[in-house]
Length: 358
Image 1: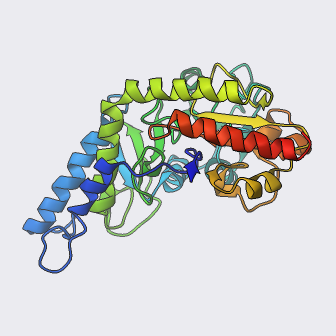
Image 2: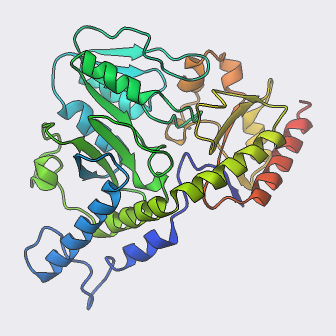
């Protein structure tokens, strides 16, 4: 099988798997301690957590702390719900539902428009009572890179906080300045079930999940040394091969663009993470295409909303009709994808599309 769905999840890095095994001991081992216990095994587990915290922090801006969570959805909830009450939360029209749904549930909200190229520019007003602005750094469906530094400045000008969903950016491009940044380990070759919220120094949040008061009193619950160690190792690998990975992805992108040159690209070709190729072909039956090319793993949209049957809210936001949105596919590739896989997948997808008379 050929895996081209890197925006949904990424293969676990061998370094991450190796780091996790030490903390999955059973009877007779020493690697199953609770990191919040005071005895030796607990201290050893805590040391592993703190090492990983440093590894993850190395790719963030200076001057903040890492709060471990179960993933980006929890991190975004903590940021939105824990950063205050009253006032409006303004967020871009192409945010993940973890931002949009949470913002609407938390109180008054306002949607920021995006252009046809998929960018949310700052030449638009926000409500006077805006307390928080949320703009993701790299969109998960079309890969567009947002002007987040400009939005951070605009937030300051409006006495608001700025939250960035950097799930698709972490380990791939330099992270933006912000007050809060959310990430998820399994999007950069770490394990599923763990993520983090980076919080700027001097910013106090309210606890959302109550209990034992772990993670600076912001996120109660026993931490998993195995998951966190895997996340830390994945972050370190991303840091070490940052430039190499980016160059590899550019090579894959250039090949994929040539192989799908008669498809229409959704979103900007320039302001984009080039590991995301979202393309469409008029009249394409995507369901049939996926059935005909079962050995190539690609997506018809966000995996988080794949069962809804609704056209992508991201593609709708950039002006596509329902029909155009439903004739779009997303190919995601990265560190472990080969050029041969891109070529083989393109041949099969193009042949299946042509079999539909397109």
